[in-house]
Image (cartoon, rainbow, N blue to C red; front, side):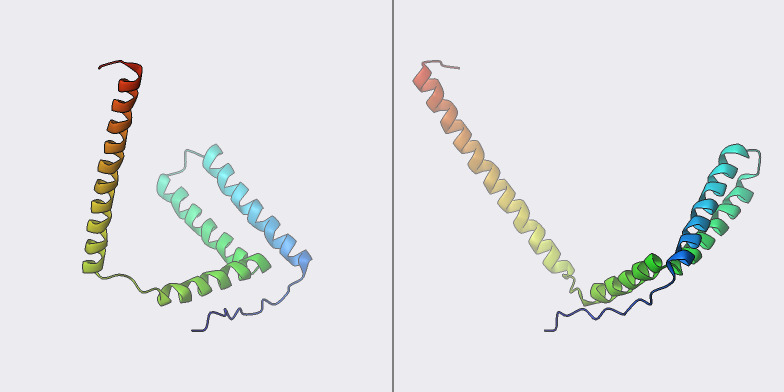
Length: 130
């Protein structure tokens, strides 16, 4: 069983260009918020269309930044790991659920019994009946 993760190297980009890209992202998000707050008279469908276009542009610019490349590599690695998961069958899930319910009921009855015994003991020691 090989547990090593093979990470793809991320090519280092110029920090100055990344700063410009992040400024563009913040500027675009600020513009969308400004337009939604101060231009409410626009039709909802038009605003929705512009918001979707802005989201796509922001994601596109984000994907070419250093952090965007790292995030995309993480998503790809997570999908690879998700394919390795062995999910239980329906029968196994039902069986496990029934076992959990039975254990919870047994534990509840046990705790109820202990509580009743302690309550009886305390009322016996203090002389209170009730």
